Image (tube, rainbow, N blue to C red):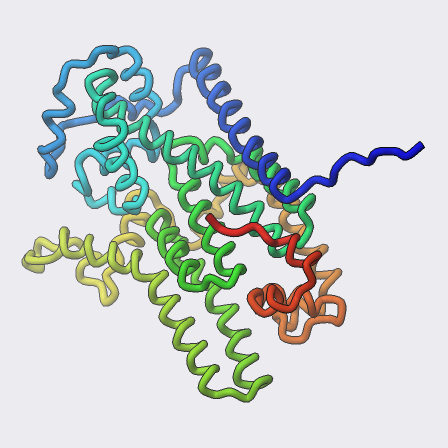
Length: 391
């Protein structure tokens, strides 16, 4: 008697599992947040700090409207703590204070946009500030689900193993720092545009990738580091054109295109620094200028991080931070030994930076550096493993 085998799991099935896991992890986290807030008083008490706007009085009428369900609005407002206070304040009032320039504009802009459009009818129901907070929560949780989806697609392109890509994405959904992806922080938007940008880059859509990676720089300052992916691949594309194909024209095109894409990724951060300089330093006499305004390279972001929060290169490495390092030690150890295992198993590929891959890694290297070439020459079986198209 013939035995009916269960149908093979397709990439679409694995993607649905990832999306379902991402949604389930957000619902579980929301339950835990509400549960623990009933049991414990919040450590941070900055949620109640909300003086009238200094430079954006247009939001005043919204904040003064009578509220139908003030208790619901108060519960949402009490959850706006830590960095969320700054993001909501910027969305409501703009950049009023020097220290607020440590928070980049993408999340506040999205919060303001959603609260003035889709969620505007809720202002008379729960209040303006509560709607701003609710907008941030919706944006970040939706962005997290999309980020998990793009992580699966990116892993599928690189690993060419649907099961491994699915497992990695599900682990991402339940990562130890998961609370930050559902709170009023920028991790979710940054992850979405970083992972989405890398997926488009590895799929051969270089211009789309540059746009997504530039948007990641609008969410967090370290988004400028994503230009490193463009630099690395440009290095390989230029090497292929100049030294293997002996085509100088093609090599120059690759170098110019890569440089322009990198400039495009840096542009949001540089533009934001110029915006801060214009608001704080422009038109003032030298005696009124802040110290950073007089610097040879006036970087407001670096000054604010160092002056107000003591953040800087290696400044976190202090004895009093030892408990935080112990708390992070499991993940740090896993990352360290994963890198060590990869280095030991692919030593030649690692130290040659991919220019002289081992024989069994040639197809993998070609897939990473020239995805569009591999997709044209691959068999149907190979392309099916990475055949999900971007929306």
